[in-house]
Image (cartoon, rainbow, N blue to C red):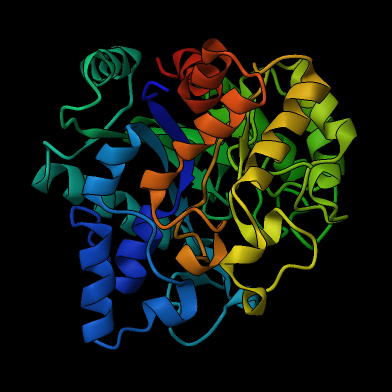
Length: 364
């Protein structure tokens, strides 16, 4: 089986960098060892890291959607969590801090990471990276804001963020003043409709992950721009009736909009009732392939599915399928899919080409 380039549609890098001081220019195993020696809180509350520079190269990662994420203080997990907000102004502050963290990362390590804001830069990176995946290449980062609460005035702030390089925006995480979200149902509000109009004006892609179904369905009908789900599994594929997951009705709407859905290899999102006490071994990597296959069967092709790992986004190595130790192990999915009859073109689409198609539409 040949190696395939990989685009990962969701990684909370800046949140980890600012919360735990994780340095993703290092080897994942070195990060783990440093945190063990320091008796750091990160492995206790977020699990052992799945990400590191050599592992990106081993996985063939060409690009990741890198998030700007901040949580409402009502959802705070503990005193250790500092990127939280009580007001939109506080959310905006932490979003700017994460933007600055990404800029420092690419400025200090230009051979390792590069911010991608335009189509030509992405195409250059793609050509350089995919000509020989065995050679080291920078990992491209496309900025995705997860939770729009830090957008104070849509008509003013959305254009400003676009100028800073933001290319994808998800209005919700939990519920926001824009719409209902995970565990907090609700439709689009008038403020949410203002936000979508401002996004459409500049050409941001809309990420419906975390949005409540009622809000997603209205957005699918009204939002004229590119729509995607960076990290969201189907409800019926995982057997979990929560608005964090995509109903078949939403799936169909996403297919009709030519959207791509990033499958999350997180055990709690793969197997109903899984808990850490059950252990990694209780969930095989085959479950990720089954979720991918569910989407492909519903869509009638492999055109609408990709990977949105959400790695280090509130869970770590201990919470991923048995065969996954780091992101370098994700390519094992290709072997499973091939055994199930997926041809090479379909596997390439799932690993990267579908997200590449989206990026070529989104990037100016």
